[in-house]
Length: 314
Ligand code: ASP
Ligand code: MG
Image 1 (cartoon, rainbow, N blue to C red):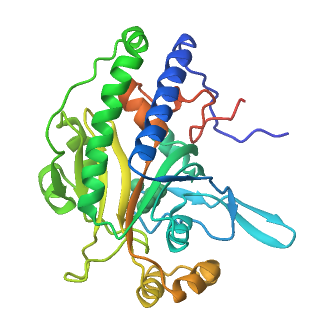
Image 2: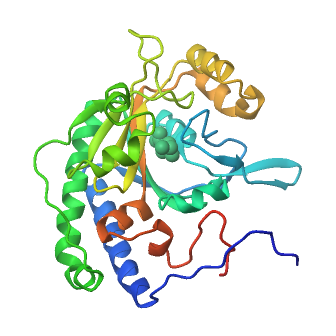
């Protein structure tokens, strides 16, 4: 088979580290699952193939070059880019608090390989809460991040020592800024600069993003969504929002984004029956492990790297 041009083959520089990253990942999964169960969430199984998936745009932060697709028995099925639309449908089924650890395939442009934080295949912990507001998600995630830091600090003491990683402590609720404030202070490309300037994670609210993130009914062009950003330059941790749940609003937003409404047919049919208002978010497991362990590249913490622009070895 012909090899794609311009690909590099990279394995993690010190193979001994893979064992440490595996242990930290395992403890992150254990803590996350326990945490969401303790908070009354129901864990759902992921889907990998569906006629509908997250369009991942228009979002200035997205560089996905195409959606992975297969044809099966005459149906065109997309590889999951995120479980967002299925989360809304599961909430409609009456599962009021849910989470899913799901594989996401996002075929990012190879230039993203150098960002340190992009993968074309990763696992996302996606959660959704019926009738919740953004403040509920802030409180939940503030507690989660603090908890996972404390848990791994103890459970992975040896691994952190071997990696030379000292995690900073932080107290109090994470600060909340609007993206407008962040742009003013740190420039258009505020994420990495602002992340480097912080010692604790912080929230960035109000991004123009996908149709399912709710537009502020009081202020057109403003959005009830948020990103959580790790400190020390590690950048984006989570994206989420209060959701558009009214059929007419969803159709309007899909139209504004110039998406093909035909691709969302089944979702729209169900939305017509009425979706339940909800809020939620999703965070990449590998990005969390990278932040905790201080790894240079998020691909380093994967046992089998999936970095845009690098050939897949195994
Ligand atoms: N999971 C995210 C959400 O809940 C969407 C994303 O993956 O960016 O909004
Ligand atoms: Mg995001």
